[in-house]
Image 1 (tube, rainbow, N blue to C red):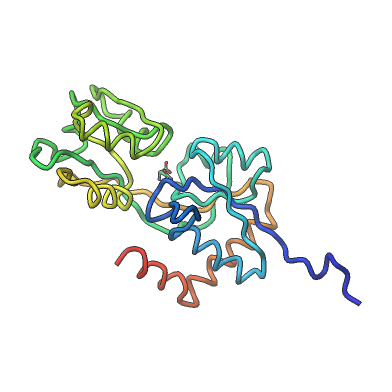
Image 2 (cartoon, protein in one colour; image 1 turned 135 degrees about the vertical axis):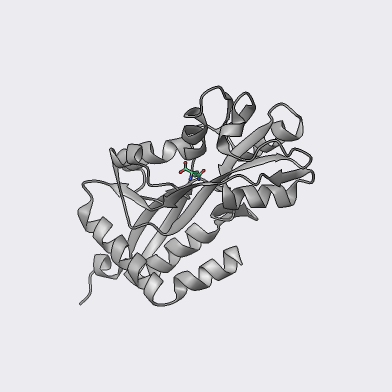
Length: 226
Ligand code: GLN
């Protein structure tokens, strides 16, 4: 006969930061978004139950290392710096950093035009790195994208640098803002796991390949980005 353990579904503990619409956000108190639905679809492929925990963005990789979660999906860019400490799957989304300004501001045509400006970034995001590398920028760091947007509206900063999809979301919801016509810095989002967790990494890679092959991934792209 089947034992209880044989019947129990495997659980995959996932960490995210639900402040990054449309990738992850709260809707009526529930965590949802492109990343979350993608993860749930991957759970179906693996016949596993996906358990998602919401935490601060800069706490995600520490939580992974401390085994509070086993997988991180959070619109997280697979940077060389992060690759030193964690493993990333194949990329699942090509994103870019854009510059948000006040509607009447036509002074920013490139990232170099941020020189001499007060620029809001989110602490530890790739936008922070991109802006910090430009000399002469007065970088203002915020804990959440929404706080940066509020500072821009209140003229406390001249621009905010953020990933394009969340940027579009915030511009839509806040009158008087626009995305500057500057060439964006590209990056790739991927799912992070512990380097030594080879077995789970292999499963997640397989599941990601499967949802890309079976049309589920395309349906989610259509739902969230078209
Ligand atoms: N893509 C950015 C990064 O990896 C922002 C991610 C996020 O805020 N969820 O730093």
